[in-house]
Structures are given as structure tokens and as C-alpha cells.
Length: 260
Image (cartoon, rainbow, N blue to C red; front, side):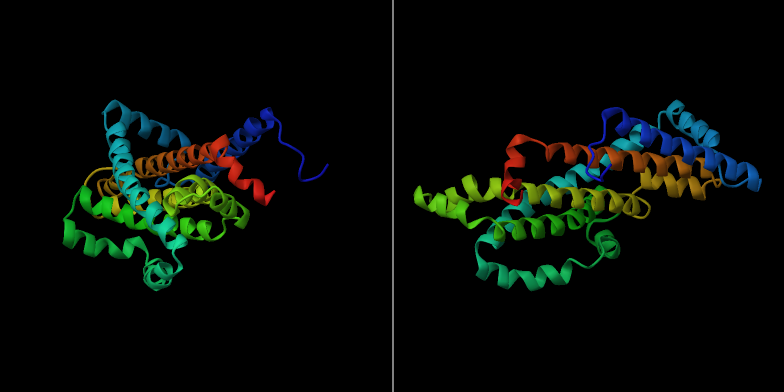
């Protein structure tokens, strides 16, 4: 059996479930063996989740976090993709902008939190700004690099049909770059989801990040802390799965044909 053997459908479900079951059993055994009264067991976390649902708080926390991510991420997509296309298409513009991009890109979005609070106060705008910063640079860089890697035969075909530069970007370059754009979107969305949790611990008074820090400070409710962490992980997994499903669309997959 080789490493390229396709995974059967039942295996794709059974093995992750088995791994999760093993982790839960190890978690429960570790809590019982240590005799800790601080770290919660899986049943404690389940009761904490039930409490949040009963009090009507859980969906509000989840909705606030998702709304902030949606706003900042959408704004980043709307700005970064056109800018990345133009920078990839015009080398002179890229040579002028690239030093600025490469200087700002390594700065952690969390380092911007004090400035975000000064500029926008403690509220949604500060969190949206941080999400925008976290998402913008991975998308613009992946788009710009994707334009540079467009196969020459695609460009020559467009030129043979007499396409204008705008039509070339819209009908040839963008579809060819779309797979790499989706890679950038996937990376950016993961970073954005990380950043919103940290931002909500400092800059706002709602959301999953606020739930974790508030549960820690108000009575050391570590069952709610772990519950919030698990919800964050589950939503992150769902978001990543959604972007990966987009990569399987026929309109996207043709861009991989030159790499096969």
C-alpha cells in the first residue's frame, strides 16, 4: 500500500472520530488521575456549554465574533485582490509598493491594538480594523505572486484574440490566478480568526475572546474558558472547510491544469 492510496469515505469519518474519542478519553483520565479541582473535565465543559445556551449567551458571542470577521475580511478582500492584480500586472508599481508591503507584513496585527484603540476606541471598528490588517497582506501577496506566475501561453492566447489590458486581466489573468487567491484567502481567514479572539480580549466587550477572558476573571470559570476555546476551534475548522470546498469548483480547478 502506498501513500497515494485514496481514502475511503467511511475512513474519512471514522478516523477523525476515533482520534477525537481518544483525546477525550485521555483528557478525562488526566483530570481524574491528577485530582485537579481547577482544570475542567469534558463533562464540566459540556455543562458549561449548556449553561451558556440556557442563558441565551452563546449565539450572541458567536454572532458578534463572526460579524466582525466578516466585515474586516470582506473589506480586505475588496481591497487586496484588485491591488494584488495591479501590482502583479505592472512591475513598476510592484517595485514601488513592495518595500512598504514587506515592511508592514511581518508586523503582528496584535501590535496594532494600542493604535487601533487610539484611532477607533474600544468597539467594533477597532476589531474590524485589526481583522482587515490581518487579512490584507496574505491576500495581496498571493494575488500579486499569482499574476507573475500566469503561464505565458495564456497571455499569448489573449493577445492573439486582441484583448485589451482590462479584458486580459478580467478574462485571462484573474481566472488563472484564482486558485492562488483562494490559498491566500484560506491563510488570511485563519489568521483573521486568530486575531479576532485576541482583539476581543482587549478592545471589545463581547464575542468569544471576551467570553474567555471574562470567564477567567469572573470566578475562574475554566469550564467556560475551555468551552470557548473548543467553539473557536470548531468554527475555525468549519471556515477552513468552506474555503477548501471552493477550491474544488470547476471554475477554479482549471487554473491548476498547467501544474499537473
